[in-house]
Image 1 (cartoon, rainbow, N blue to C red):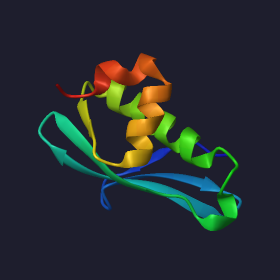
Image 2 (spheres, one colour):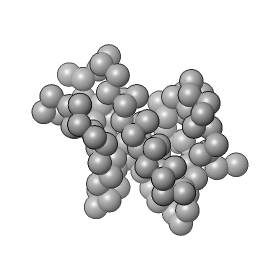
Image 3 (cartoon, rainbow, N blue to C red):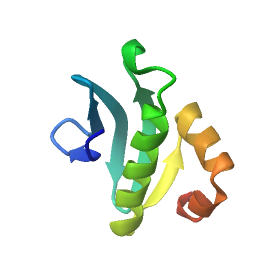
Image 4 (cartoon, one colour):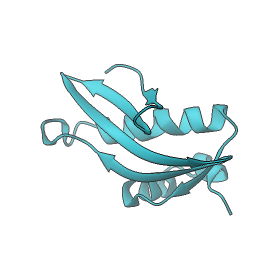
Length: 91
């Protein structure tokens, strides 16, 4: 798996795996980023690609000093399973 890339022109984080691209679409408003939708191609399902994508994206959110609104159910559930990222959630 490659590294997670922030494609700012398309407002999404991307992870290329086996010739496919998984994406985490977001909306940025000041210091708050809203993760709207996670899209993992069917060919990559069950391989942990979504988790690697979310973790890589959240690591970049943390590094940028942003707060997160996890609108996407996958991201919300992922954070619940990884409470060390809960501090990123905007209150």
